[in-house]
Length: 155
Length: 91
Image (cartoon, rainbow over all chains, first blue to last red; front, side, top):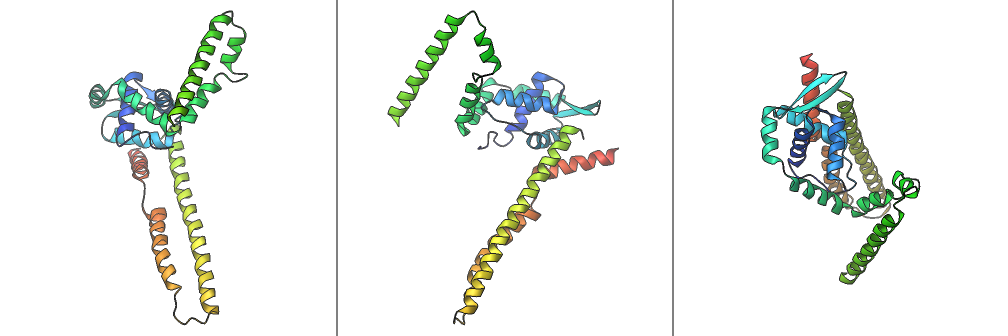
């Protein structure tokens, strides 16, 4: 998978996550980043932790110890940085990169939600809104087929 | 350092070990090839030691790879170590 974050972008993203979550554990930051970037991108502590250390060193975030685990939160400086950096378009750029780096992953993840035995599939089986759901799925299938046909024509 | 930090350190450590393993694999291929070339040279009637050209040419790559595997450190590793040292000394 190619790089999702350019120089300094991971730190900026962490600052933005902390601005919305407040005081949070390392795993909380990791999960929030995974959620916001999407596209099957999986961050790891080995990538996130050094960025956290750098942000502590630069005075953007501070840590507090609680029950043997470390919580991160923004300092005044970090809050200022978040206010000047925060924008939704930033996340969509990152998501685009995550998806284009391996489009099969995000399509696969979406399709897995409809797999046999999945929670969504179980709910679909027991729903009373059968007709409504069937028409949504039918419409989506037709749209996907159209997009694929048009894509083949271009190539 | 909490569990998250320790996991990060272990991950970085694993990356460093992998870098070194790749170097040794590269070195094994290099050494085998060079021995093979020297044997061919020794068995042939050539007096000029032509095997030195691939030896030095490839040798430069091996040296560069060794520097990458054993000397150069990723900035993230330096950061983590510095933080760990600061924590240790601070307590």
